[in-house]
Length: 328
Ligand code: AMP
Ligand code: MN
Ligand code: MN
Image (cartoon, rainbow, N blue to C red; front, top):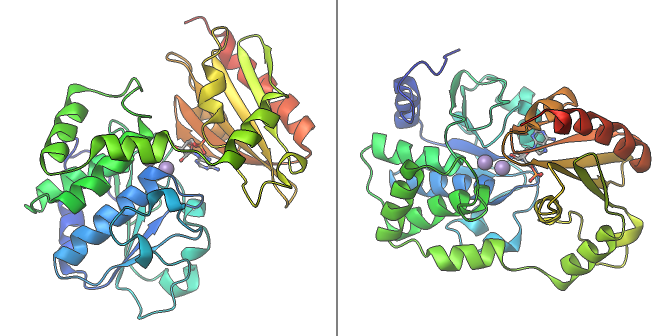
């Protein structure tokens, strides 16, 4: 195991060595992938391909069509049934369960595992762990990796790198956006990354089904003691063509002036409830998510809890109220 005692924003040397000697690395993005999961997967996949390697890009769940402008989008597989990899790289995942069914211990457990991630709740599950919670996105880390490998940016790489930065910061609105992030962004735009197109495609485009689901979920919104919450039930979405998550809703309800913390509870067919949390500056939802078996960042975290949705909502909202009470 390695720690992150090296200089921030610089990948550990053993990571660079492992990448350089790999021929067929298996790259894994987390389940229910977001822009940073797919952005870092395709950025690193494209970079390694350009370096003459033969990477496998994998994600248990199909990458949303929103991201079909990214390089190698069509090469992302949901099953690894091709030639055996010689290295495994986990991206944007804070614990091994986030890799889902892709990481089969019996098949890949003997291969070196590299973890590249920016979650403060990361449990350091790799042989080499490069975890930097100061980075706004795993994609920001892949940018530093590109520099450390002395590889040039090009338009394709820059586009994939900027996607995770844009989506994980919701268009540069989060408190972790520093001059360093804007500097990196400037360089990516310089290399040809289309900022406005990425923003429009990833943050400002929604299906009518999603807007309908938001409307139904908003009917359940409740605010008490600084915590605002809503439910997304199976019944609400049964006529909406397979849509599951009310993407973006949790950030939207946090915009209520009285709210310190927001939560959306999504009822799943397997009897579980997916919980999605957001917090205003000064409040931390990552530890509550971690305690409930999930993870995330202080202002944005999530977990999956077994139980009936109303009961889960009641129980979890009480926990969130404790955090919202903290005088900030
Ligand atoms: P979401 O609300 O799904 O957008 O997730 C917000 C943040 O929490 C992201 O950084 C996710 O990676 C993290 N997160 C969400 N669900 C989980 C989970 N079940 N386990 C670990 N991290 C999670
Ligand atoms: Mn992610
Ligand atoms: Mn991320």
